Length: 306
Ligand code: MG
View 1 (cartoon, helix red, strand yellow):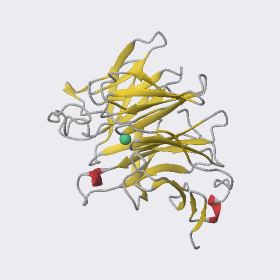
View 2 (tube, protein in one colour):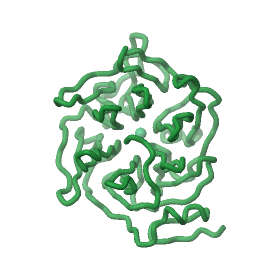
View 3 (cartoon, helix red, strand yellow):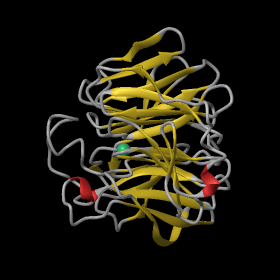
């Protein structure tokens, strides 16, 4: 079909019309950041947390009040999510760890080493309904001092991990990525999506999202290409209740059907690095886009815990 535009929505497939609410417009909620990622919605407190990586801090955004500093320094935090108890789970470039913020505000390190070697710089995480924390470990936080602390990789590879926080067991579940980055489960948790953003530093490397079958709830099999991003990289993504994948891209957010077909886009004037669904109806798409935070209401609802 011919591409059709409704406001900032770009419709590539008729199925996207139901998500492209005609009266909905992209709102810029805040700006002036260094480079923001890791949005996570707290429905219980009606606020959004996100990370400004190079400025080494995390912010909290509240409707009507705007942004305030949540944590500084943040140890160059990047991706954020919440566990089954609602506790904040954070990927930290600076400390090269995955941490959990307890309800009393103290911070517990969940993972810092694999087989005795320090992690590279955990990037993004997803919590499964059994409480396990799945995360990616590319080197973006150790490539320079800009988003962490420059260092050599001790592991010598960029892996995808499954962590059991009850035992501390850390297992590598995928080893064939150049730079694994965004990570999210399908609503039924039978599939795990993981992006490879190797393209960011080498145009010959991938910029696609792969999908795996989750076997026995803990192993990955049958890894295959799910979708290829045509602009920028799929740094972060979330699923909606219909099983569509909403991913970041250079031109905004791109929405792919469960079969990997591009349904449509939300055009954003800055490169989007991450996104998440939030708001009381879980239908507000929050976009961390380089130096600014944007939001738009869509006709889809987020499927996952944030
Ligand atoms: Mg990322």
